[in-house]
Length: 218
Image 1 (cartoon, rainbow, N blue to C red):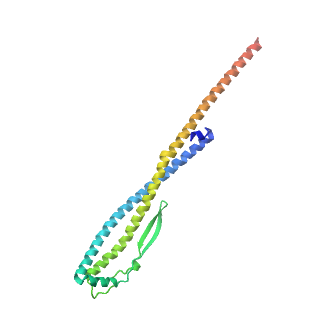
Image 2 (image 1 turned 90 degrees about the vertical axis):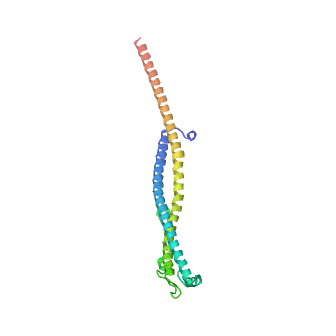
Image 3 (image 1 turned 120 degrees about the vertical axis):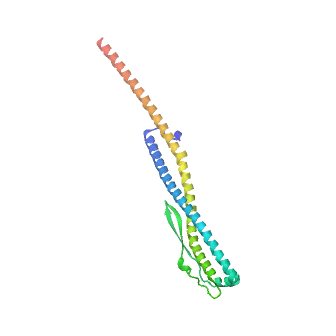
């Protein structure tokens, strides 16, 4: 880079400005990365907690469904469930975390009845318990989808941000620091040369003046 740039004061000032801008950008990106990492850790914790709770509820739901099948027969239970008109619906929106769009997933509770909508003649309390547990599963699925979707988006942006930080730290900033140092050294050398040249000229002038003064006195 130094070969393509003249060592002038204007270029030195411009290089210093570019260096300061790169360092400021690096600081901003590092703050963004730290905030995203904090959000990422929080969502990883939420996802693990929700996943654990989901598996626990699913296990209870299948146990209740198994008991209902044992008591009433799997075909009878299947026929009762097929008579249900419930269709789960999820609402998806987005919010921004430091400029990163992350999903907001919510279970639309209006689409599924809180109470069972199948007939009670050929069913029992175990099936009702299973229904309640699966209703909770629908809610937990939205929480898990939101957390995992956020993790995916944040992780990708953290990687991109870290690559930009590395490029600034290990490529651009050292390059402009070295360039500024090189220009400064060249300018200092020019100043020294100019000082020596000026001093030499001054000495020559003084010597010449002395010689003229001697000749006039003679």
